[in-house]
Image 1 (cartoon, helix red, strand yellow):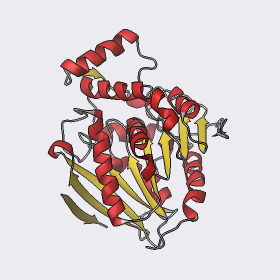
Image 2 (spheres, one colour):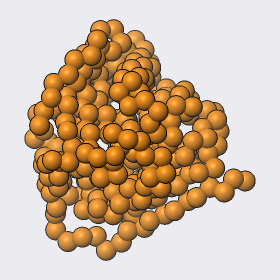
Image 3 (cartoon, helix red, strand yellow):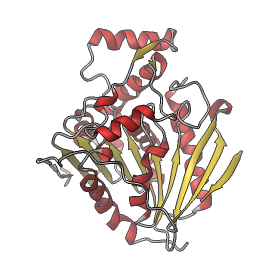
Image 4 (cartoon, one colour):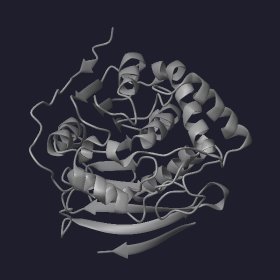
Length: 321
């Protein structure tokens, strides 16, 4: 059930954009430039186990070039990506952005999941909605952090339906930097005591931009408590599965990652670049940038890289609105 509410030796390409000489001072995440350019629809559907999943659809005016589904990260929500949506809309892309179960406006126990596949099953439902509303469109998937791991899992199962995968700071090796004993205990707790609190994210590691950090801490739709053992174990399990599965991934891939990311180690993107079977793969690493590269002081350059990668992939097959 869907409800709607309208509101105004492969030739691998590896590019390392090492950004030095950081911008002085701080900068606010820019206000979205939607105005008359994009129609916003807030909608929902019934996901796995009857969980209500709320999502946004942003539709630009004029000729549409394709669809992007955007998967946000752990303990946040889709509303934090409005400036990213604006950049995607400038290319004529319709953006579907859900709040994952247990996050933001969606229902479910906060930042918890019974099975990792619940996340990907919800995404599959949303892709089905997008396909019905925009049939025969080029379709892309963009995921950040935990959403990057969800997106990678989804792409490995459904790449035949995707024209490209973009991952920002993907949390695909969550055990990196954690003691082996703690990881083992976390997996055990996740199985037998899934509601047990196991870790809490440090907001200071999100961005070097203090305005971004302050907004993150004050965000009423964000989650600022401890992450459950069940979700941590699900993420660890997904990470364990990736190395063996990545060679089967052959669609175009863009990876963007800050080298100073202490929430999702850059080795995750490097692992994908090394093992994925795609002959069209671009890895961009950004020297000294923290976890949310789309919210760093250099965000315009990072978002420019995203747009530059997408532009030739959508302009050739624009579809009429």
